[in-house]
Each structure stands twice: as structure tokens, then as C-alpha cells.
Image (cartoon, rainbow over all chains, first blue to last red; front, side, top):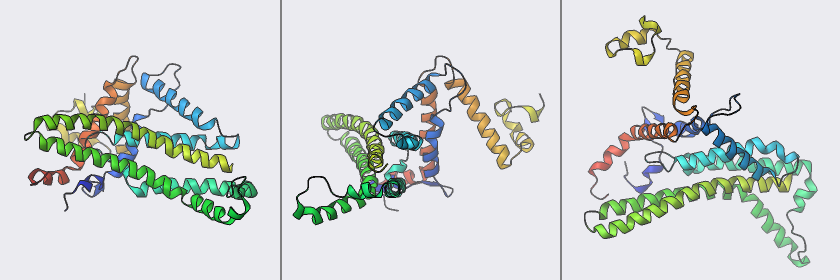
Amino acid sequence: MNLSFFDQFMSPCLLGIPLIPLSMLFPALLLPAPNNRWITNRLSTLQLWLFHMITKQLMIPLNKNGHKWALLLTSLMVLLLMINLLGLLPYTFTPTTQLSMNMALAFPLWLATLLTGLRNQPSISLGHLLPEGTPTPLIPALILIETTSLLIRPLALGVRLTANLTAGHLLIQLISTATTTLLPIMPAISILTAMILFLLTILEVAVAMIQAYVFVLLLSLYLQENI
Amino acid sequence: GPLAERRLLAVRLGELPAWLATRQLSAQGLLGGARKAWSSYYNKYINVKRGGPAGISMLLAGYCLLSYAWSYQRLKCHRWRKYH
């Protein structure tokens, strides 16, 4: 039983049931299924507008074959967005702070894009390993570098999301601890820290949305190269 | 009406065990009950013509409370820490 700042990242268990499955399934409640009415309620209208915007943004650069990935990429984006934003509520658990979950999302999807490229257009996919216009003596080194950067992509995708969210949550916990501890001792400094906490929370909301967007955007870019 | 046909909110506290005995406590019965509860909440607070933030906010507040209850065992120990 260690009461450290990293306790918030351990999934709490009640009667042996961890909270992770509930945290991952809860966004489904906030996204109502479309019904057959012409004018739906405000939540459905907002949701429809958001999905249209996301799908348009992701699908414009892709060709027709890439549009088959529309459902996967849009639903992934919405899942990450909801999970990240819900984690900012008090006492909630954020599944995307766990590296296992992010790697489980990043690795299969990256591998799918790679294998799609190698299967359908192998020469072009291998050709991406050498940028155009490289001077001849540099070619071997550059191929090694590009291969490394290709193979490190899933790791980067997973770790980027984990690290950003974990760092944000830790910072919030640290600064709020400082605020509450300083309140009886030096109220003026406590107010300053509270203002910093307010700004940090706004930053965390932005980071939550941006990280979800970056994850899916990078996946769509890897897809663009390979499809 | 008769006990077996009443909804949960219409059952008095003393009659609760008897009411529970009339319900189908199989997985399918529980799932059907959960679906009915969700759709009645959804149609009352969210699926209205001029809804506002209230419907979703109640849901999020309930989620926060549930998360607090889930992690209570761990949070209990933080009360007596020397350095917070």
C-alpha cells in the first residue's frame, strides 16, 4: 500500500471488479444511437455535426480505397476524445493513461496500414524508405534511418498518448496538492497556485482533444502513404 | 396494482424483497431491466425537444459518484496521511 502520486493510475477494484471496463464503456452511453426522426434531440444533432466534421477532416486527403477506413478512424477518434475528456472529471479513471491500452490500439492499426501497403503496392511502400533527391553516398545510412523511423511508429503513437495524459494528470494532482496545503499557511500564494491550476485545467482539456486528434491523424497519414 | 406489475419506483421499501422475488433474475432479465431503465432516463431527460446540459450533467455527476464509490477503499487511507 504505497500512497504516492501514481495511485491515481492504478485501476481501482470493488469486490474484485476493476473500474477499467466501466470507464471504457461509459462513453457509449453519452453517444445516443440515431433514430428515425427527421429532427432529433439536441444531443443527437450535436453528435451528428461533430461526426460529420471529423469524418470530413479525416477523409478528404484519402483516396477511394482509404474511405473504407472511415468507420474505424472516426469511431477511434470519438472513443479517444470521450475517454480523455471524461478522465478530467473528479475521481474518474482514464484508461488511456495505461500504456497497455494505447499500445493495443496503436500497434495493430499501424501494422494494418503497413501490411496493406506491402500487399497492394510493395514497390511504392518500400520506396518510401528513401526520400527523393538523396545524395548517393548517404543512401545506406538513410535507408537504415527510415526503417528505424518506420518501426518506431507504433511505439511513438502509444507512448505519446500515454505520456501526455499521464503528465497532465500528475501535474493537476501536484498543483492541487500544493494549493490545498498552502491554503492555511500562505493564502496569497494559494490563490496564485489556484489560478495556475485553473489555467492548467484549460490546457488539459485542450491536450485531451489534441492528443486524440493527433493519434488518429497520424494513423490516417500512415494510411495515406500505403493505400 | 398487483406487486408483480409495478415498476421499481412505485414499490414501497417494505415490499422490496417480495418485489425482487417476482422479477426474473437471469442475465436476460437483468439486461432487459437495465435497458428499460436507461431508455426511460434517456426519454425523460435527454430526448426532449429543448434539452439543455442538465440531462448529460446528471449522468456525468452519477458517473463521478460511482467512480468515488469504486475507489473509496483506496481513498480512505489518504485521510490519515501525515504529508498530503
